Image (cartoon, rainbow, N blue to C red; front, side, top):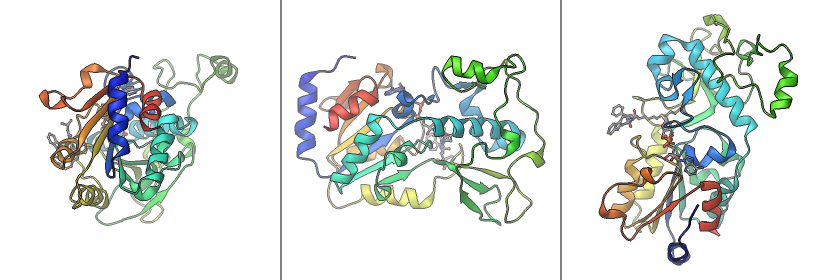
Length: 296
Ligand code: BJW
């Protein structure tokens, strides 16, 4: 991981005089905490592309499979710890009232790093909210950290490995049901979490799937920040491929409000295209290492 001292110094100079900073966070921020990203290596869960499970169509077709995927994601997120980048961003929020974080992450790690909530907008929801699938009629939702969500979603131990608890300890991690050799039980509808209010519909994870609208109050908070009379000084783009909208669109919107853009990404190919990066910053490497260095 090479970091240009010249770029670091120029970023620190800009940071010192900044009053309004916007950050867009993506899955790469939590990669060092052990959580997989969506695209590229790690974006496959068993034989399924993670993206293909993050749709209302997938849930309608096979709610059991989609719940197994999300139950596993919740379990992994609960086991994970915030990394130094989550803490550095939370600290920046505490010391700068004009700092706002727009997070695409649903893993709860920014919240667990004590990021002030009024400066943290969750663009794609959270794994730890459950809500009734019928939003139009039954508006039930709850905060829920139960692991597993319901007993039928208990992560299965492997038939191939009857001493799985021992094996888990030896492996130094939890049983990885990403391994296709570990069979998943077929689930019936009545095994899945049901809405306690209408008692008819299934509950679903409170995340935003493709084709669904982002929460209105979140969009409003982002627009309010962008439309504030004072310009934006810096736009931080951390660990995201910036391929999903409207999230990715906030980079251009911040630029239109005067922001210099600072991209922190492991992968050079996820550097935004176009000549406009001149005069902005690209830091290649692990966000967990670079973000604390940049924000110190
Ligand atoms: C590291 C690292 C390390 C690795 N350190 N870096 C305009 C144009 C075209 C299409 C659309 C448009 N507007 C809307 C759309 C449709 C659609 C969309 O964007 N499609 C695109 C694919 C083109 N958008 C939507 O449907 C959104 N809804 C919406 O707009 O409603 C109105 C509407 C509907 C329909 C039509 C038009 C308007 C909803 C989007 C919801 C996205 N949901 C998901 C799943 C959430 C639940 C879950 O977690 O399961 O959100 S998809 C997935 O992608 C997840 C992520 O938040 C999101 C972004 O991914 P992210 O975080 O960038 O991860 P990766 O894996 O892509 O990248 C990781 C990066 O980290 C890489 O760059 C690595 O190099 C890097 N990295 N380790 C630093 N250690």
